[in-house]
Structure formats: structure tokens, C-alpha cells
Image 1 (cartoon, chains in turn red, yellow):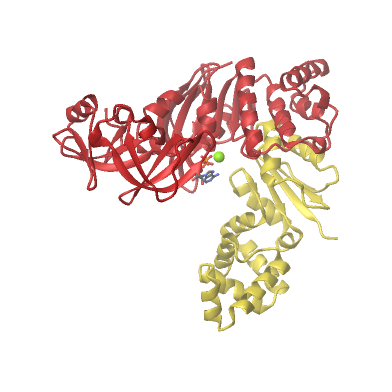
Image 2: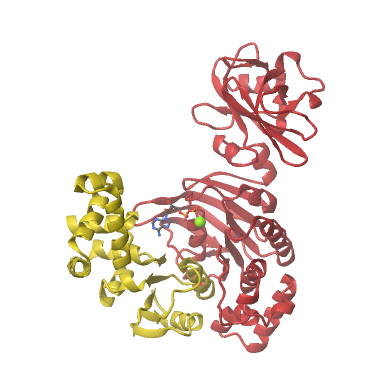
Length: 366
Length: 185
Ligand SMILES: Nc1ncnc2c1ncn2[C@@H]1O[C@H](COP(=O)(O)OP(=O)(O)O)[C@@H](O)[C@H]1O
Ligand SMILES: [Mg+2]
């Protein structure tokens, strides 16, 4: 088990692509940390630097107390799980799982013990004689995990391990990996571009964009207090709605088409920060837009009425897209709400749960 | 018989990776072997992607290495020696054929000459001219056809022939860049 520390880690490739910049972070012992961000933002590069598969251009990496920059990959005691779950085609499951240990010259009885332990944890006991060809996608992925588990490594690194599975299996394996982590408690860095995976699996999330960390926090913090416009838009489905408007000295949020009275506390904060008279971006999650079914004590001035553009029944909820004077606003409402395309709908924003961002630097206000 | 060739290049401890490759492709025959690079001849294309094999081996050996695959067509355009040298120059990773050719072209004048000679021996002038025109038209086939005074369908036919005869797809960016470098430098 081990802690990991990054101090201003930076990676510049030979073609002068700056893949990772000023990456500082402490990963705690036994933590399940998820790095999430769009494709190309530097997630894999970060992971590969930890594994020792890429040199660190500048900054420091510590594994436990050891300064790890100069350590060769094979001496880092790290196990990796990748997106592809190819296995050695001519070996059975047992041999596939034990192969890494055999290469490392472990005695036979130790290999046997570890492979059997891992097989039990992963429910693979009955498949040990099978060749990869005779396994389903999920079973193969489990063997790939098993190949990492038997190593008893200090740290697990997983790079999009579920991306090649179909949607249903992905959800199932998500749960299995989390359970597995509870059981063996190995410090894990898990990389994904899928924010749902990050939200459901992580102890803590690191959101990255263009090589820079945008925010580090628990899923709760990231969801409820996104640090900037990018994080706010990246995390959560359906995507957060954004509207630009002016904060007036009367305590309202004013656009060309409507004006909303802000709750006292919200206005107080904006005013204290000097935003009166300035344009800001208001962010509101579709879950925080209510139709009249849930509009108990709404301020009457704040009730808006516009046309429905799209209505998508999602099961227990309906996502409706409303045409608010040319801007699209998505609301997630009760599935019993009977609305169709073109209908007029009354709705309000739950402004207590609104987010405000500086229009220039896109940072969260407060 | 036409064979695939798989190149494996490592910084050190090459023996281990060769052993691994042999256990993934027992049907492969070892063609060449230096301290750092092994070349395996395979009767068929590997089942999984290069990415997948690279990750599989990586998870067992924990050390940087490169794996590259050449199709029967593209392979014979260039000498094995040059391919080995190109691989040594590339950052560690996994490559399909044309990205190695691209790098090779960038680095070695002699290899470039050799490559050009073999390419010209293999295909007709028209095909080469068509592929080059496409490259110079930023992959815009309509524009390339216009510049060559041929019908767009004629051009597309020639591009397909080029691909069939060389294994390089002139409609891919990398090939276009490769040709561009080969003939404009
Ligand atoms: N070996 C390399 N040489 C040059 N650039 C690279 C290399 N590997 C990755 N990059 C670039 O670095 C950036 C980050 O890549 P990566 O870490 O793979 O992103 P992610 O895993 O988040 O999709 C990308 O712009 C990518 O093109
Ligand atoms: Mg990646």
C-alpha cells in the first residue's frame, strides 16, 4: 500500500506538445482516485508517468516516501489494467493470470496461491482451465483484472478499463471494481473520459482539461460546487444550462427577455464580490428547473413561460428542452408531466441551487 | 507466400519481450534479431489490434517498448534494416505501418531514395501522380481531379489501385504527408 505525491509535474513531448502541466496532487493510501476529462487532456500521460513508462519533464513524483522520477518502471511495484483486455491466446485463464509472476520468477506454490485467491475474489474459479476464446467479454475483463491483482502491487493504475465493454456490462463491472477495491484496498488511480464512471466510482475526482487540473474534490463537491464553467458543463447529465445576464442593483438577474429576483443570500454574495451591474453566467442543472408540479412557493415574478422544443421520456423522468427566447434550457421533470412538442410550459429555476460564474475568467463566484 | 512482419523493439532486456512474443504468436518465425529488436514473420494478420498486444505485454513486463506491424504490401517497399533504425528513433509505443514509414522518411535520406525507387518500380506513373496530386490538394479529390484534368471517378479508381498495389492508402493523411515529404524535400 502506498501514498502518491505529485509536485508540479509536467510533461512536454518531443514534438513540444505540453501534455501535462503543473500537476500537483496527493493520492492517499487506499484511495480510489479517478482522473476524468475529455480525450487528449493528458490523463493517460499522467498515468504513464506514474508507471514509469514516460519520463517526467519536470517536477517530482513520490511513491510512498521514495523519490520516484528516476526509478525504472519494473522497480515501481505498480500494476496496470488497460482498455484492451487481450489475453495470451494459447494459455488458459490460470496461466494468463500467473504469467507475470512466472516472468518474475516466483515459486510455483506462491503463484498457485495468488492465482487461486484472485480467482476466488473475481468469481473465476470455474473458468481457470478455459482458453480466452471460450470466455465472454466480461469474463476476459475480469481475467485482465486478475492479472493485476495477483501482483500484490502497491498501486493500481487503470486506464479506461471499461471503455471496450457494452453499456450494460460496463455498469456491472463498475460495481465490481468498486467492490474489489473495498476488499483489497490497494491505492488506485483510475482514468476515464466518462463522467458517470467518475461520479459513481471515485473517492475523489480530478477533473483535467488541456493538461491542467481544473478541480480536485469528492463527487459531491465537484457536482455541487464546480470550480469553473468547464467543470460545471462537463460533470452531470443532462448538461447544466448556462445563461448570461446582468446582476442589477435591485437584486435581480436580468437578460434581454426576462428578469429573475435573486434570493437575498445569493444576491448578497454577488454584491459583496462586486458583481452588481456586471454580466455573469448563471448555471442551473436540469434537476433544478421545476415545472408547476413542483412549484410550491415560487416567487410569482420568477415563473417563466415558454414553448417546449423536445420532450424525451427517460423512464421515471422526462427531459424537456425549452426554447427560452432562442436559448435552449433543459429541465428534468417528473415523467407524469404530460407535455409535448410545441406546448407552452410554466417553470422556475431553483435559484438557491444556481451557480454563478465570472463571464471573463469563467471561475465560480463565491 | 505473403507474410506479415512484426517488429518488437525495446530499450533493454529484449530477451524477455521476445519470449513473450513467442508465446503470443507461436506460429511466428524469428527472422532477425539484434540486442534490442526482434522481427517475427507471421503467416496471418494478428487477431487483436496492436494496441491490445502492446498493453498485454506492457502489463507483464513494465518497460517501454515498441511494436510495429507491416502488411505484406507495405513491408516490401523498404529494407528491414531501415525499418529497425526507424523504430529505434521513434518514441516508445505501438505503430501501424505507415506511421513508421513516415518517421523513417523524415529521418533518413538514403532510405527515402530507396523507398522512392521501389515505389516507382512497383506502380505506374499515373498512380503515383494521382496520389501526389491528392496530397497536394489537401486530400480534396475533386480539386485534385480538376488539376489533373481527369474525371473524379478516374482519380478515385487510381487511388484504389495505388492502395491495392502498395498497401498504403493515399486518402489517409499520413500517407499523403509521407508522399509529400518523399517528393518535395
Ligand atoms: N508519445 C507522444 N508523443 C507526442 N504527443 C503525445 C504522445 N502521447 C500523447 N501525446 C499528446 O499528449 C496529449 C495528451 O494525451 P493523452 O495523455 O493520451 O490524453 P488522454 O489520455 O487524456 O486522452 C495529446 O495531445 C496527445 O496527442
Ligand atoms: Mg487516454
